[in-house]
Image 1 (tube, rainbow, N blue to C red):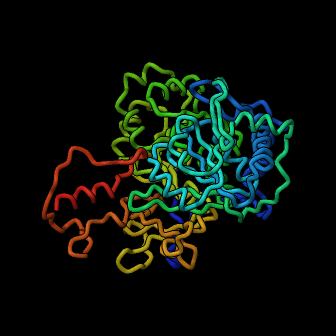
Image 2: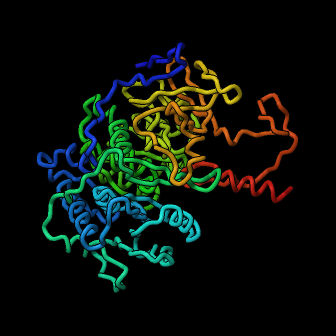
Length: 492
């Protein structure tokens, strides 16, 4: 059905037309305990929670809880991990990564994730910024963190032989064994207001910043991400996690949110198109979240797609960066029965801000990111006058929600510039709402072209054009603006 706008001309505020959701108000609640309370393990202990696409290694919800509890006890008693200690997780997608994440935060400790593709220098920047007391990684990435004089916990596939280690390196399996037969979390009081993680922003316009996210942020974001599924009483779904778990989309929207609902999450370590299609067929995947480069790769391979049974798919959602209406339409031709949708979110909101939903919005492929997610309010602020704008006028997208960050780690200036006194998060994105309440994201404010200090509008003329073989982009499809600027400056 078509949406209706919820714009209030008096306040100039847009409110989500989605029904309200109940977010728990209990102060002493960690995201880990909330997950295990929500999925009612006693009624579905043998349902698969996580499965590895390559090895078929799997964890039921009962096994997931047991492993989280065991690891939490070992981290507490054998590695002496304390509340507010920071743990750096450097790993590709794995069913063991969520176990580590949930165990760490259950102790009141703080996790931070890093991109496995980072250089040692890039990891050093993050390490020095948040000062981890423990690093969790895999044997193939160990060289990247050897420079740091902190204990290292190695994740490894179960079937590989034990590695020779020194006194500062521990093995994941050994820590599980050391915990014995415990099946409950350590009795540590963790509050919703406590910090759960520092997720570092992509840094395409500067050095990456540590986004402070609380347990309450993750709890709210999980309920927001699954609100439509609950509203329409969807059966248990199967989500394929091909986007990185170190990214907010992978960790918060897919892994944490869907596990909390009791859905199955299938992990793919590295994207390969045939592997992805084979996994959809084998695991009967219902939901596929992608970034634009992956969607483009899928759209180009019609004949390959015809070789696999993709009938289980209920929807494909593209996030992390804008995707063209034309690309969505092209993929829709190849999968005519599968809604191809777009969503919009940020690390600073712990996940989703807006998303199209097949049972709620029509038509698709409008180029919008859908309507605001539950709990969200928004204003569109003029970049010239700072006044709030009505529908169909372009300005900065500002949002409020229980899921938004407290600010940036050790960066009060950036925090003040991003979150104002009324709690509005200034996203730095340009966009507008139409009359139906659909949000269109157009560009980044910082990337507007300026000439002699003035922002260029369409009627201004270009003075010089350079042709390049390709535009440098990140893995999620965002343009690496710093590299573009560096290339321009090198030619001046």
